[in-house]
Length: 120
Image (cartoon, rainbow, N blue to C red):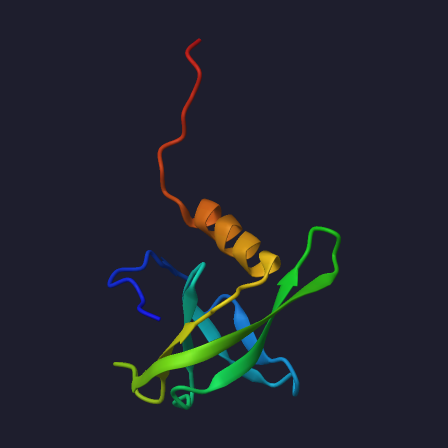
């Protein structure tokens, strides 16, 4: 599979924590997201070409925590400019609808487009 050379991503440093779905241990934080992938910022380098079972825990308007579970394959991992941090790029082959919805919500939330006002 050939990935596009340029994927639109939205920066999210240190807001949403990513967990290992089976152990519930934190893996790191979302650095950015797109429908097809994400960048994870973590304390450790990730094994490339390995598939990871990941989970996001999203607080809902109902006060409950909602899980977004997905599989992602690590494409690359490198040390960040910040000592002790690693950036790793993951691709999602078949992201679940909840993940796609989350990306769309985050895109709207972080969009800095001017608000349209109605004439008075």
